[in-house]
Each structure stands twice: as structure tokens, then as C-alpha cells.
Amino acid sequence: MKQLYCRYLSVFLLLLGSAWPVMADKLCPVCRQNFEDKVNFCPVDGAKLETASGSSSITLELKPVPADAGIRVNGMPSEAKPLNIEDNIEYKIEIASEGFKPAVLSFKNNGGRITLSMNLCSLSPEEQRTARMANLAGSRDHDMVEIKQGIYTLGSERGNYDERPLRKIETAGFWIDRHEVTCAQYQRFLEDVRKNGHKWCHPSEAPHKDHTPYHTYAWALKFSWVGGQPPRGMGDFPVVLVDWYDAWAYANWAGKRLPTEDEWEIAARSTDGREYPWGNTFSDDRCNVGDQPIEVGAFATGASPWGVNDMAGNVAEWTATAYEPRAADSQLFSGKFGQPVIRGGSWDDNSKTCRSAARDVRRSPVYRSTTVGFRCVADHDPLHIQQGKIK
Image (cartoon, rainbow, N blue to C red; front, side):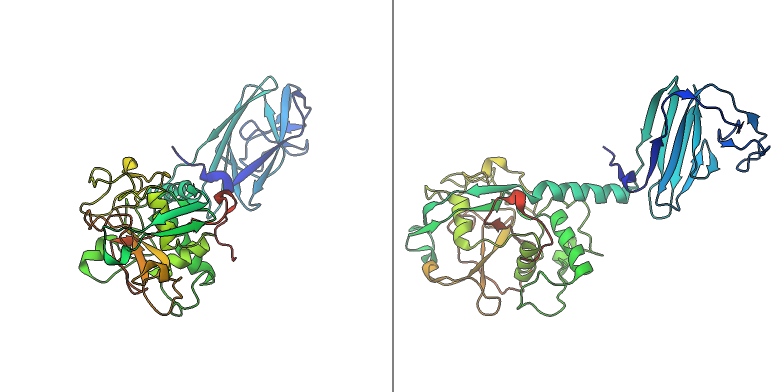
């Protein structure tokens, strides 16, 4: 469906009266504008003026926005002045200005009853792509799942040494993104940083850091961004090739934050200590372990008990926690010392690393990979979250 991008360029049509006889001195038979009796030829199109009749008509005042926009009435240039609309004559008003889509409005006076037609403006292929990206991003921003307050058991006695022992964690509750952050969402953040600077970024990140997802290796070119644009067709794919500082800055810009690894695991497992978001048996029909990342939410049957998607496979995810061999000793990553934990397994992983308790993956905060993305959490109802605000 076409988007109405003409909304920034409009003609205000002010009805100065309803159907009543309007006695005008002179009327142009071509552009249908009225002129004083002393004028014999239309100054717009040169047609000879006729004596106006007392037929039923409506007077319309045209006020273009922006004020310097050009107006054409029935194909003829026209000034922004009152226009006499007579019975049973169709009028087509076009307005255009540099930097805007042209707008077209057609109407007809049927004995005082106005029939109005508004034309949607066609978008170029690139404009259609931009509009689709905006729609995709908007549909994901506030799609978050509430994790209830409570005490949860985390870790595993059957997994790696750093998953032991089992531990109980109490949370006041939080909200987590239903899906991993997509390329369409990340693009708006990137545009805002380029326009307004690095005011959302972590204080420990390198000065003038480039937040563009990219990597110089050949295997990463397919997922690298060019000119601030994600690869075509990947608007609803999880953003990859982002390091920890990129993820932290995006979350801050979005009015959210990165989850701790405990919060991440609670969202993936709920209260029963299950091995995978969907249960205790691995199934490649419930998660994306294949050739590359795919659209978020493609494996609905693999959602966690809370309804959070892609907590196993697709892309692994940055957290706010610095790795320690004992999870109970872990603290928030300061941005300087240590390695932030990555959770969830990716499209390039297997059943062991896709387990919800698996936590032995940690990297330098400047690490970029086609297997790593992120999602965000919030402490309050996401309906009140605004992007681009400084907390």
C-alpha cells in the first residue's frame, strides 16, 4: 500500500461560503477565475473574459504550504487567490515545490454538494524501501514482553563448569524486547548519531567511534553496511557486526538498556529450569541454526514461556554483564576492564551452545561478528519509552 508522503505539502481549501448565487463581474472560461469588470482578458491564460452568471457556485480560497509553492488549476498556472467553483465542472488543483512530492486534489460542485478526490503520490523504489524500513522499525520499538517480579533458579548442574552451582536470583521485574534489534531499528539510531553526535554513547568508547555495522573480512561483506544503509532485503533481520559499545549506545538512545545475563536467562527459561526456551529437547525446527541470520521471529514455536523469540539461534546477544567463572561473582561491565558476556547461541552454533544456561562465550567489547547482535530491556512500561532522549 502506498504511503501518503504528500502530507508535508498541502493546499488549505477554505470554504468561504456554501452553495449560494455568486455575482461576479468577469469570469475566465478557461481557469474559471473571477476578475474585475474593467479587465477584459485573463492575465493567467489570455482568454477573453465573460460576464459571470448568477448560477450556484462556491468560492474557494487557496493557501499553499509552503507559501512559495506553485499552483495549477486545470493545468493552468494560478495565483493563490479566491477561486469561483461553478456547478458541474470538475476542477483539478495541483501544487508543487522543490523538495516535496506534488499533491493533486480534484473536486466538483454538484449543486452545492462537493465531491472531493485526493490522489496518493507515487513513491520511487528507493522511497518505498525507506518507507518500508520505517514501518518495520516502528512495529518493533514497543514490542516488549513483561517479565514478572519473582525469584528464579538459574544455572545448570549438567552444563559447563561456569554454569554451576544453581543459584537463585530475585528480580523486581522488567520488560524485554520480543525480538532482537533489527537493521531497520538500528538505522534510525545511526542517522541520529550522525546528525546529533555521540551523546548517547558509553563514556569509555573511543572518541568519534563509527557505529556503522561493518567488517573488513570478505566473509562479512554480505552483512556490512554501505552509506549508512543496511544490505537490501535485510531490514527485518537482526543487526550484526555491532560491538558492545554499539549495542550499549543504541539501547541508551532507544530509552532502554542492555540486559544483564541473569535477566537474559530468566527471559529465556522462566521458572522451570528448562534447557531451551521451548523445553528440554533440542530441535532445529524451533530455532535458526543454519547458513546465516534470518528475519526475527521466524520460529514462533521456539519462543520462551514468556513469548520472547529467538533466544536460541539466529544471533547470539550482547549483555551488560562482565564474565566471571562463577556467575554469582559477575558484575556489570564497566566498559574498560573485562569481557562482556554473550548469550543465546547463533545461526552458526549447535545444541550445546544454544542452551539457555550456556554462558562461557565472552569477547572484547570491540568484537564484531556476523553471529552477534543484541536486544534491549526496560524497567518500565514500553509505551512511555521515547527514542533519542537523554536520561
